Length: 357
Image (cartoon, rainbow, N blue to C red; front, side, top):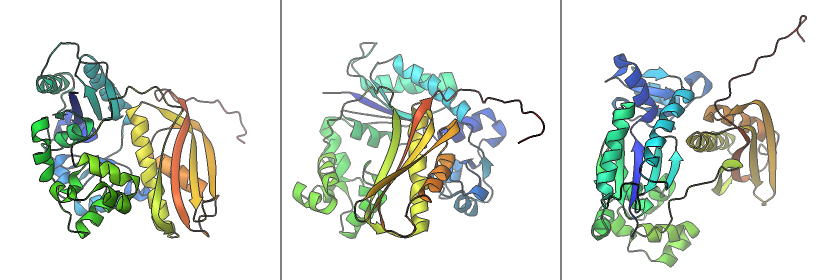
């Protein structure tokens, strides 16, 4: 049986800023884009979360809920440096490390460099080493598969350590609200709650065919995870040629405001994955599928590589304007970034001659 640890840094961006600027400790700190440019929250401190703030929330909404918040720009270069230090720590314990984002990763410690049989002891040691090296706290989850390890790391934040052994998995999942299941999104959770399915126990009463009828192939995933079944291995990925994310809409959409919001959300998801892999790309591509299943793509190659969600989102919306999305219903949207270069490349400068063109 596998021994999996999921490490999730606590309010990563905001915690780095509070560490580096002592005057911010104990204050609601919000890291993200400018409200004037329709920016969103990247990360907020736990002091800000008390007011209902969360990542991906529009910055204008965040500042309305918490006017006293300290708003800081994203300093991705600094955050990547800290992430690299943390990944070095992971690799002291095992080669099987799967980064999920810039601030979280799965580790398979079934076989590890210390020959330690207890994954719990290893998780605690990793937490302590992260704090000693970076001054930052991490939450850890330990279990026998990735799904349960992720659920466990969310249970006691910040700086928590939760273990879900095989014999306690079903009892743990039975009391968990469906909205807390990693992999069940807000729309699906609302649909289930509307059917009076509120906990893992309720969800486990539905058979596989019913769940597939309700949610398609995702229904089978729900059927398995509510039983604690997840056979996915921790994968050490090769460097991809592109990073993308797409969404198929439940119903064809003609609401341009909603479509723009979806594109920005997709862009931020792509940015999250780029940053996790320390990648930046020059080419942004969008995919648009109309209601009749006709699919078109549009691409733009920037002079400098991009990995920022707001920037990718603006490019994506500009590309969408070159499609027929204003006149035809949309079934699917996708955003991809490729043509990678190293994200640490310094900006280039060109000497211009008078008169300027």
